[in-house]
Length: 509
Image (cartoon, rainbow, N blue to C red; front, side, top):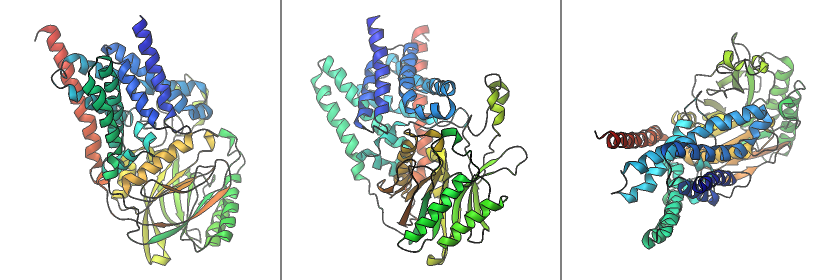
């Protein structure tokens, strides 16, 4: 009983510690401690106790990590989300118990930590896909953006970073296990190898230089009232804020502007159908003498709406557009509406957002370059999805722009968590990445993941950025699909082999 209680407390403590590796605390070495503690907690777990311990770990991590969801949707949906997503961490514990108890590792003790890391990453990959399109928030690789290991994103994206991080953490757990069992070699060698793994990113040749010219951006954070879900209550107030900040930016800009960037939902009314919004947007574009990229909501479909990014000329002509491919379930659309209606009458107030079908790119005419520049136009949570970002760059994007509206989440870590993702995407794709938020944090990130400029939360601010355009395709973009699926399929096969072996041993097959 005491051992079970100890393991339960270890798992819960490890989950809470993992959250401290992420913003706003951001002590990334604690991510390794969390993995090592979970390894210890699972040391003698059965499949079912492994499921329970992993789930406790996941819930203890996600409750504080997703605190912003409490502010956005209330306590019941927040807890339900954390409880459900915690099951994916439970699968780590169950799968690891099957492998460890199968005897597969008895002759290959060196493989224990790598197999544990593979199982963890498979869980992250699965969580990024299901249910309802997945929820890839809180992948451990994001927490290590300021560690050398983050540079591995250039080679294999977020999955590779997570794999190496968990492997290093598991080696620390193995070192402690070896110490308790008086295995001097393992206790001494494992931590050295863990430290070496974290530094292996230094071999990655990151290049932040422009390859095909530069573009001058005017990035506007117009701000909203700090009222959470009520931030957009006053019609066109947010749009006016962005217009005012654009005019101020133009006056203070040190040079010409090639593109004005407004965030997601900066135009709370669609400028194509609302005259007042059209006037505000064209006034901003004409003041900058540049096209303007802005986010709005398109209500033209009869059966729903689109979360749309528009590229407008100085005259207000639509040059290009993109609609969000991955609307957020239970926020932008209601899955299983007939069932959800039984739990809350509010679900019918949500008009379902329809997913867009085009790749996240737009072509911006840049007079100074005498050509069009293809930009990646990722909307809000889409930055968490590997395929959307990867497909954008594979389609020719020379620059990434992440338009987001973080007003709903107040002064929580949601925006800084998102900035971690944007920074890792910059490394992964070898592109400058811009995060443009209604309320912050907005930032300009170079291809090495370094933040060049940023803003504070809930302030009207703007940034003038002269950034390089790049055309080189990184290995993560070229081979990311194979890496992602490989890191899901291989561990699943290992676990299935372990389960089969345990069944065969039990029934003497």
